[in-house]
Image (cartoon, rainbow, N blue to C red):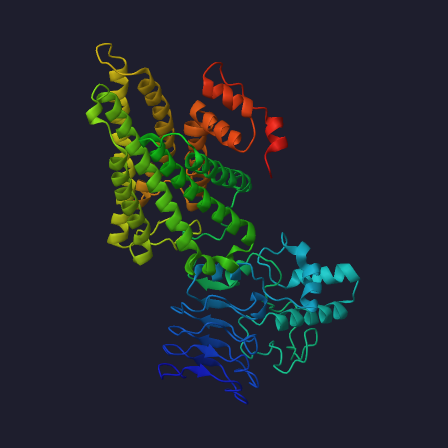
Length: 548
């Protein structure tokens, strides 16, 4: 027992020549390293190892095969365990991270060649022997299969059960059926056989019988609702959709930003706000691309990488980008709605127009607000590390709960403001006594379609999120990933098409850019002269001349 005594390192051969049963190293808060050969030379054991409340980063591969119970609670530095097949006789584990238990759940009890032979013989006995135990059924099966004489069948059953018991060390404590510790290799057993006949009381669970689950490996902490044992994106169709949506969102919004920045047109308030909206949606696309990449890399083995992804900065980066991009998009759309309402309401008052400096000041405030909201989970208010998709779903503490509620309510308030703005715009446009330009009316209609599409996608997230905060979740984390892929990124893909790629103004900007590159010169000249309508530039022509 070496607990609570300031040990910093367990050196090699520290237990050489010892017979170990239980090793207590817990509450050594300075213990950071156990040498790879620390348990080398041990005569027996250990069967129990406690590393709770230490700073151990890894376990040695040598000497842990005999461990039956492993305890490492509050050992936050132990992020990677040895290969799970190393734990040949592990029966229970109390660990720090649920993902370790996800991996250990896949660990089947070690089975040697001898037990495999017996399992093949007994697999058909399930319906006859629901208890899954060896007894009369195995005796009859051996007799029927090999036409053995009663004495020979009894001896065969005895040897078979003894071999299986020798392999299954769980619950074996130096009884008459336990193998000797000096067994040289698997498949050779030193067993003291009891004098009883094989039908006089065998009680050994074998193979995959119904009692195996009850006697299987126990592990805590169990995976919870936020961290189920599944990949980042569990459904196949969501993977395909995510791999399509994320590159589309990144490329489309990058194209919009590039065209707006290279355009020679006057940089109006609307174009200024559209540029910020494209950047916000570009951030959302980057977040989705990160999630898709991690899912692709860790598919089917996420439990191996879960701790590194969720605790070592990757998830924090992805979550901060997501919250910043989402909130900046909502904030910018709200400003766009207010700006269009203001422009139409004061259509005949040139002195009341929103100037570029006003929009710049408002966007600066928006950037500061959204950056603050994105940083708060990084400083302990909620957390991005709770779930594999790196969204702030931690609501355990009052501050975290208040943060998530505030985030959702800001979206609800923004939706209300946008709805009122466009409702008033609709009433003004349909009022013949109100003077408003046709251009403003057309712009208002396009913006209404853009903004309502955005909030139609956000509404399910806000609805289910508020119920989850109130501890009345209406869906599991697996189902919420459907919202993530189907609704969360939809705006990032729709925005560049609604406000840019499908508009005449954007076509004009692209045409002017191509003309400066020596392409579509004739169409650009016709557009500048305003003599004829602009024929579209042939896609084949563009493909031949645009450099790759």
